[in-house]
Length: 398
Image (cartoon, rainbow, N blue to C red; front, side, top):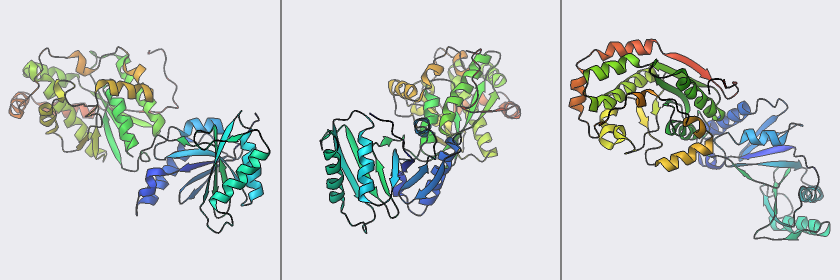
């Protein structure tokens, strides 16, 4: 086993390859996102080709870069690679070096001749390279379950030799489809919804409703930490912290308790809708799942959403709680989400919330107080905070 140093990383586009006239917009966005994520490695240089992105390492640490690259949406897979001249002897020599990287017992050759002017066909490349490996090592060929796959791609100006394909997290490059406002409560579901929203090419901002002094500083910091964890996938995230106490108290004073949650959610949507319009954000996204709680029955979702003009995405709508928990653990937000700091929805929790609310009842209760002035005041006092995964977490809060 010997130390092996790649000189390139090859990123393959995957789903982006199916795009038509706007394909260039998607690949440009992906390249920009990768450059942004890897900006800590100044030696890297980039070259975009039709089927992927070539990153020249120029001595930078492949193992560290590999971990950062795994956090970027929008590509199918990437590989550490060696680029050599289009010379079969150079290809054979490099392939043999790859076999010494670990204590392999078996291998398989996979060749692709992208440039058909190369004199050897793919099967001939396979035979010649495999023959050289067999003559100069103890490895055996296993085409079904090999320890090592050696990939050779013949391009117009070079040959690429790779030994692994590391799957990306898929989706579209974050930001290529615009922006969305994530309603971030601090629970398990909303960060997962944010992750899934970013995965489909949307850059997120967050809105959080705080009911101080009924909610604590720890509850707010918990939301900041969740946003920091999500920022790994897109960079800086803006959070709008909306003071919601006065609106909540007015709701509980003037509305029947069973309708309090429904009306409270309608107020949240009104505020989110207006902030989206002011910031030219064309989508709202959240962690609602059909039937999970009283405010998420089909009837409740319909009545609540009627106050909002902005399109609402619900990426979690058909997931159950177990699926949500599994995904939260996968993306690293679960342990923060379960910290015992209550949000504004849990501290004013009615005993018997309505599950099939009527819009006319909501309008009746809303007519009993001046919610418009309270909404305006809440938006006026919007606390805007920007967080990043590069920020240092304040461990004293937790």
